[in-house]
Length: 67
Image: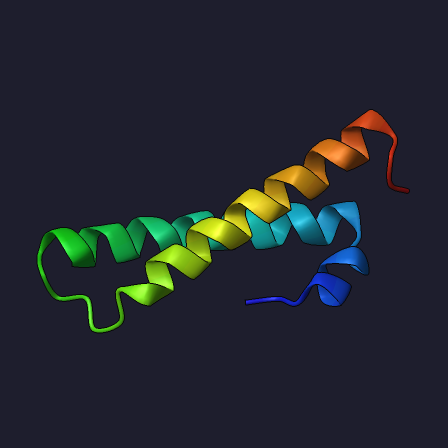
């Protein structure tokens, strides 16, 4: 999970790439959770939170709040 300072330093392209990777990882973790093969269920919470933060950053880029 990235810290707030690391998130602030990302460019728009890096945010898009990281978001895509995290969404894929989240989908895989959800499948593992459904099959009860998930070793660390707390990872789901952190990954969902990071996806939300990345989506917020992307929205800020699109609204012109970040450059």
